[in-house]
Every structure is written in C-alpha cells, then in structure tokens.
Image 1 (cartoon, one colour):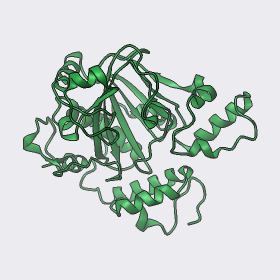
Image 2: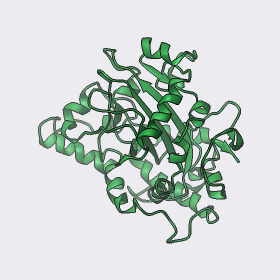
Image 3: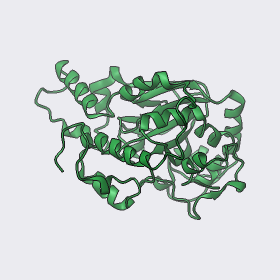
Length: 343
C-alpha cells in the first residue's frame, strides 16, 4: 500500500473500483486518513471514465460556460454562481414544500421519523426536512441539478461522468439557543466518498440573520489544510507544537474553534432565493444557525458512483413517468440519474 503523497496507489485497482462493494469502501474510508483521499478519488474516477466512452460528450460539444472558473474551484473548493433559479421558480418551490409534510431534522436520518405538517414543524421545531421522493417531485430542482453547464463542469472537476446520488431539502427555523445536531450547525467535514461535490441552492432570501452557509475554502485538501494551520501558528492563534491530526478528522471540531483560528478565511454565502453554490464539502463547512429568518435550502450531491450516503429510496428509483421531469432522454442522463430515477 505504499504511496507517494499525491500519487496514485499501486496494486489497489480492485478496491478503488467504483463498482466495488459499498460496505467495504466505507470500511476503507474509516481506516484511510483524509490526506490519502485525493489520490484514491483520482484513481476511482479514472477507472470509471474508462467505462464511459458511450456517455462522454465529444470534445467541443460540452457546455463550457463555467469552465474558466474550474481552476479556482479546485483550489478553493467553493464556486458561487449567484442566482440560477428565477425568483418565480424559487417561489414555486417554496409553495410546494410549504404544502408538504416533513420531519424534525435537517435530514430524515437525524429526525425522530415522525411525519408532521409543515406548519407544526415551523412553529415548534428547529427543522423541517423532506423525504427523497418528495424532493424529486418538487418543481424545477431536478432540472437544475441536471443543467448541462453544471453537469459538464462537475464532470471536468470530478474526472468522470458524475453520478447524482443524493438530493435533499430542508428548512432551518430561528429561535433556538444551541446548534443541533452538532454535525450540521457546527463546522464539520463530509465523508460520503473519496471525491464528491455538493450543489446548494437557496430557496429563500438568505442574509446574515437567515443562517447562511459557511465554508473554509482550501480546507478540502491536505496541502490546503496544512497551509491554513501554518498560517494560524505563524499568527499566534495556534501553538507552534499543536498537532495537525484533529484538523483532518471527520468528527466535528470543538465549538468555536474554526472561527477562532481561521475566522478571516471563512466564506459566508448570502443572496436572494435561487442563489447557488458548488462546494467540495470535504472542507470544513456548516449551515449557521438562523437568528431571525427561516431558511429553505436544497442540495444535490455528485460523485463517482454509489456510496454509503446515496439515496436509499424504499421502493428503489422512482419511475420517470411518475415525475414531472424536464430532463433530456439519453443514455448519459439515464446514467447520471440512475440511483434516483428509473427510465
């Protein structure tokens, strides 16, 4: 298993296979330190792309409108697009979700699994999240998640045709004193796979009082994290002999630590309903607590293949004809959406 940092792994092709057993892949992520993940992700994407010749677009036919921003995204792990949904489209989505029942967590897995009306959750609970099939039936969102300019950019960044493996939407409500659960509103890293990207879309206007998304750019890579640590040590915010290991953990860091050490580096995303951003959420990030306004947000997650955070639809992918999807019918689209939609 010897490697050169940043290089590819030798003799590891079998377990880097993106079609390998997901439980075994999860075990490997538990034992491999985060600094090794980039090399693994690059190799997984290479293996996947070898099998995708029938899915990749011919050179020159990609929607390249965001390609000039790719180097900055790969360096920072954050790309802010501004509004990608029109105001009336965001309003359509809000009205839809206000009419749906949901659960009292930022994700069903973190809820008590009791379905309640939106109005009850808004009045008495921190969150209202929705089932995956409810999200898939929302207007406009799956069309945006499949927008050629976004998908083609993600393919360039990922190294292979992406798999859309998770969608979610949830409200965060103001009026609570402490963040809960700790992995949501405290800074943390996501560990879905070795390499994956998350599209976030605000569906309400979000300012400083509405719980904006925050992220520590460049912390998605080992060199970027080490540079941030070195800067904090040079400034005297961190002892010179402080170990690096806690900053590569996928457990939430101590409350307030990221803010105290790297406060001036934290990016806070605000904007009107429809505002979108692409994030490498292996970086430290959080949804900050709303103080005086509710926030509704959507995510779409893209990776090399299925992983342990993939959508787990009880009855399997939903049939396309049961959804009001404005998505092209093609082998490429069917592949990208295969974990969520059955053509």
